[in-house]
Length: 513
Image 1 (tube, rainbow, N blue to C red):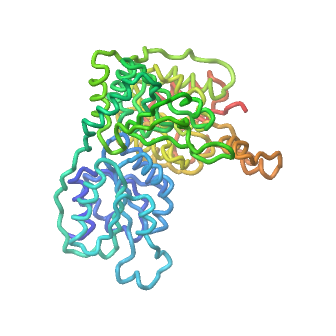
Image 2: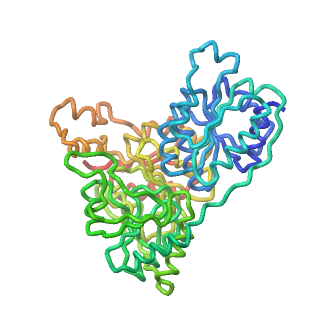
Image 3: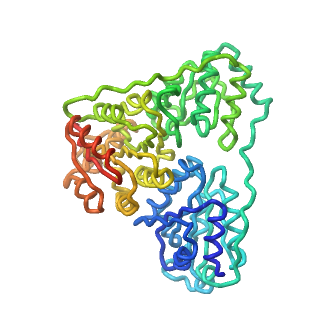
């Protein structure tokens, strides 16, 4: 058995049975091994950033890693932005990166690069398999290392793939999430009972349904406020769950949301900081004099810790939850709020919403908070272009659930080729393009950093016109049925049809400026 065959069989045995791939010459023996191991599903993408973003979406929804297959250092480099997002969201993922044959590396071929250094910028585990006999054991160790979150990168020289002498390795035991010490729960319980203004700051696994309900029980019994991190990797939402407001993105709004807080209790996440530094603005929204406490860190069992806290401080309290309610269908021109109302009115049960709406997302969380139960995936690391690939991965992980991608127009172009993979995989994804014809988020940032300009050259760098982007033509050219909506009524009609038909659809929602 050659190294590639042993690798693929070991991955499948360890529960990694989906691979998002953009292979090249050095990965051909991995590709050939797929015929010998039909249990491994291979999903072709046309750009490495789609492969890595799809593996991120898959991991968030499946709760276990997918693999990516990338071509040498440049191929991994093309996928780095969405690997950054996956790292920030603690998604488990295994990258298999092909490399030159060992004897060829010394020749400094044109595609030679320092793959290990590139991988180290986003990976929690990196290894280079040096012999066919090592490959399977390395793969098994990689899967175990990331089972509870993290990115592993296995560098696979071409000759290690093609040479015989390999054997399948058994899966390694996976350690459960560490439990929070009871003494930590007791310390936080004393703070929550203290009567001062307390905010429970939720993220990570605590944004699951069970975690939020336990946090809402604490809030009901103690008066603590609940605030979620700005971009949780995955959040359960809808009727029967608490309506937990996320910390706003703009610094001034984030500081206002936490104003007066005396104790900030972190549950499943880290202390908040602003995405960027601005003149005259503190780097974080935590008020001066506020004491930060840690109930659970990312990677610990935050749900169990929150349940223990609820039992300690509010055993008989009933959590406040949202009662089922949908917005009325609006009429007239499309803008961010009417678009959000249409989505809220028609959101299907058990949907997966992938949110990269950016500045066009005004009203989205508000209009969907009390609707049918659904999961919400956010842009965790701020590297735009993750939305379309994440939707692909979510659809592969949950083929029985409708996926709705709400996608800003500018960031859609980073990974627009994901649409081709949607069509190829017949993925049940409805994409709504928030088409305002500009990098609107950068227009806001230009002002906030004190660089506002009325100059024509500056404005041109933030404008997507001249020529405008025809998303209907782009989608149709890659095999995805597409329509254009300019009114709320048109969006509602087109969204109903898209959700009623299997397979991918795209709606270009043209928003009034």
